[in-house]
Amino acid sequence: MNKTWIITKREYLTRVRKRTFILSTFLTPLLFAGVIGIIIFITIRNSDKENIAVIDHSGVFKLKTDSLKSVKFLLNPEVDITNFYKNGFSAILFAPHTSSNKSDKWELYSRKSFGVIAREQVNDKIRKEIENELLLRKYQVSNSKIDSIRAVVDKIRLTPIRLGENSKIENGDSTLAYIVGYAASFLIYLTLFIYGAMVMRGVMEEKTNRIAEVIVSSVIPFQLMMGKIVGIGAVGLTQFLLWILLIIVFSAVLGAFIPPEVLRQAQQANAQMPGGQGNEAMIQLAGTIHNFSTVNWPLIVGCFIFYFISGYLFYAALFAAVGSAVNEDPQDAQSLVFPITMPLVLAIIIMINAITHPESGLATWSSIIPFFSPIVMMARIPFGVPGTVPWWQLGLSMTLLVAGFLFTTWLSAKIYRTGILLYGKKITWKEMWKWAWRTS
Image (cartoon, rainbow, N blue to C red; front, side, top):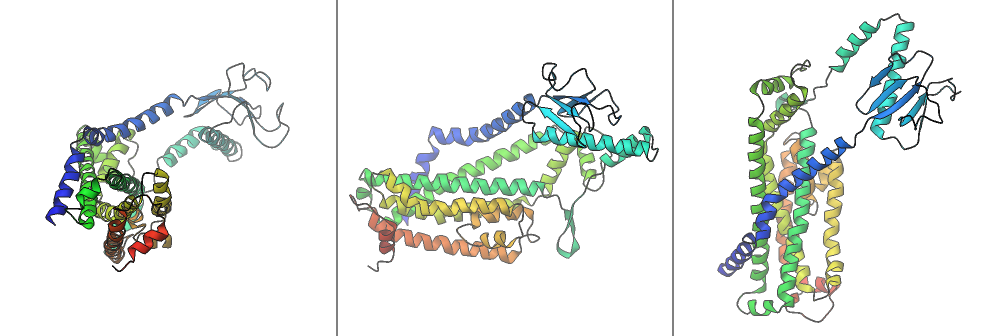
């Protein structure tokens, strides 16, 4: 046990003292934030308004000009289908039974493909204008009354409410659970790949450099394998804990800049409609932060750490076994590691379905099976425990995952014992399976 601790300590200290570890730990969150900021900036800069010429002599369109978020309309300009582009218009909209449109449909001509958002805004505009025309002509409703009705309707917001245990009323907005579940699952997915591959490369380097021959003269192969797995896993856990700390600090700093009255408005908005008062963007931001405070973070963080450690031990042992069987040829490693990576890829596909249908049969059973549970269960937990995830499912998932990594560690140790000192032979999974079940 003492020798395993020495190997674990060496693997841990060697990696956390590297400059790459320090830079990746503190710069990765900033890099992600920067990438998101750049995407938003580019999206805003490239979201130029589409100028649309509207040819309509039926009186459906009332305003001479009208602007929406992505579309600007100009009614009856001096253009036709042959020269609208030269006059600065990106498209020309013909009402039914006009000069170039003899059909009963509205037709939109353009020289480029219209974006989905812009196209939907044009559709909404046409529907609203026809609706106004019908209300005005057929039912004699004035424009001022139509505008007042629309103002009331636009303020209507749906407030989802979930009934917990004993009919306890809880916040039913699943947006935050969707984000947290996706982020937690994807982080575990990445780390299982990154740190599992790191274990495999470390074992391969020691084997190809013949260092393993020297090490196993003083420690047994199982101690060497466990020391590497635990040491590298501790590096990943340290990095995650630092990231969580940075997120908490960032959230606290962000919350300090939001005025208290806006926070009070956001808290009231959980129970009733905000009424359009105050800065709407700030209220939405404050509401998101308030929802963050209602999340059961101790449970989520605790489960995240458990599934990260257990899932890592489950897969890292398999990666170590592959690394011990591979010689100098990296193509051998790719062929042997494929059966290990396939369940991870399948798990991330199932997770995408699980965050939209967290109580489906696929999500439930996949979150219990050890090959998928570290990723899929973390996608379900933010939706509520014991609401969406009953305690028995969480307990069974954890129990099977612990039993799973104990089994894979035992199995991989038998492969590792033979493969770490075997050179010059191309190994297949069939032969590794024979090593694993060899009695001697």
